[in-house]
Length: 293
View: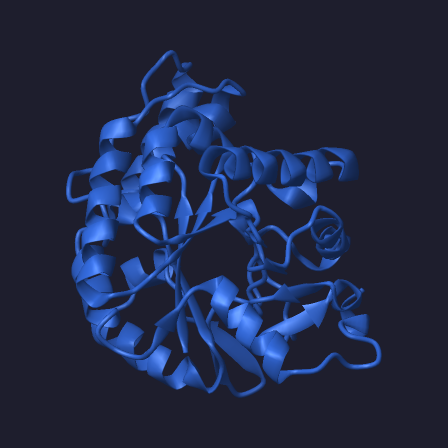
């Protein structure tokens, strides 16, 4: 079973906010084009995705979020702003979780059950965030990558769904392939831009001993070159934004065709439906998730 997830954020808006601390509604054209591509591809293959929406993106472009929901896709939360959770105080972290959940539920009039942290930033040092997500009313999280990585990941974490937070929350880790004593990532994002298409397809086939959760960002599906981040930005921030834009261009043009190919293989479901099936099939243990508290 496979789950297509989208981290729905507008990269010029996101980068501008991170560099300046200000929120501006920029980059709509690229986000709209990417939404068109996403909806067309998923409709062609009869696949419903889970779309984790950034709060500031929902505030800037509510019509695009409503359009995705109206097309039958599941909405999840991606934080109120694109800040790493492991760099926030517990109070700010919890406020972000609750704010984005309330914002999206008000926007579409439906429950939001899932969460994904910006930058997959639930790591070993802040696993108490899983308890906070359960306290905020979320049913599942999909933030943990069970690999060794300099910016994210929890090495040794199970590769499949896991009950955590005393059984109140299910963790859906990102797709990996078990190799020896470790795991290799095949979930999407930069890995899909860097790896040959055939490696991605074979990797997902090899990962299918567990449900494979994959992800993309909208700008990976935009047929046009990435938009520049508008000013005002100082010289250093302009350089940083340009470097990020250059990195996002590399290997990106083939992503729509790769997604089209990937969606033709395997069986697809939403994250919420996968969680419901997991909870039905796997009765709780005496101390669910105790080793990760």
